[in-house]
Amino acid sequence: MEHRSPLRRYAILGTGAIGGYYGACLQKSGCDVHFLARSDYDHIQVHGLQVDSPDGDFKLSPVQVYASVEAMPPCDVIIVALKTTQNHLLNILLPPLLGEHSTVLLLQNGLNAEEQVAGIVGDRHRVMGGLCFICSNKVGPGHIRHVDYKAIAIGEYAPDYAPLNISDALEAIAQDFESAGIPIVRSEDLLLARWQKLLWNIPFNGLSVVLDATTDEMIHHPAIRQLAEDLMNEVRAIAAAYSRTIEDNYVEKILADTETMEPYRTSMKLDFENQNVMEVDAIFGNPLKAAQAKGISTPKLEVLYQQLTFLNRHSAMRVV
Image (cartoon, rainbow, N blue to C red; front, side, top):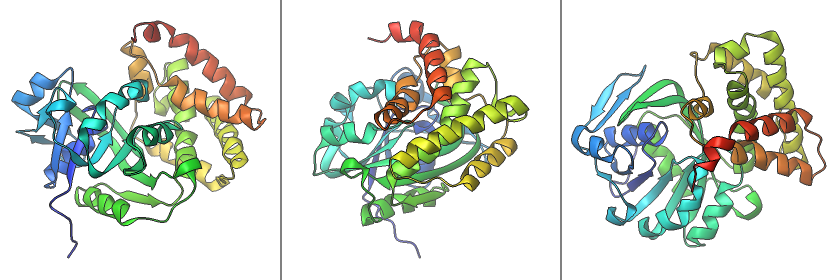
């Protein structure tokens, strides 16, 4: 029989499409979960969390929800499910939640966030990255709609993204998620996992905004499918320059998975439609800088980044 410590306490920073869904699944399975919510704190406090999912709809009430981290207890695992555009707040949000040996798990897109977090929490605390392969949206206050997929690839951060063996701490967290019905891929190479996720995020998040299109519209249009594949191959070239090899069949798998995916409006497209600042720097700017540092030519990524920077300008001006 699987053993799972009853003492592990989880904090969820960001009760949105990602944090709301995974946190709700963890609580439903019996974990002690504490949610930070901002705009819908009052609603969740009264009505709880509603999750619609092809796996079965469910509602959680009551929910341990807070309007500030100062009111939350220290936690064993702190899940950062904020958009990377809010990472400048982590030096304020993380310290009150740190216990003696807390782990910070970033469920975020993009590149290089773990290095920033490691600088905040110090050597005593583990930092892990989680790459979520999920279609999920927040459709109302305390209301998450899970559309398709849900697996997470989790890897542990080391300086310079050196590969690491699977630690007991990572295994314990993985077992908690698996007990909550979430498939977990245990990765010994977090940097490789990040490049693999960017292989999908860069073409489909970016093009969904520029083309005003859903995933099914893009993947079934021959010219756009080819453009997505071209962008993927540019990402592969950058990864290879950092000694991370992504095989041809991985590209083919991603394209095939996108073909069978439920029609989906990407998170970046929703951010653009709602006039929220998009994660342009983390998902596009940082990989582009990585390419330039190695002298890798990525003309299509560069054009996409320039277009998204232009489209992001009005939302970015509202961020203080």
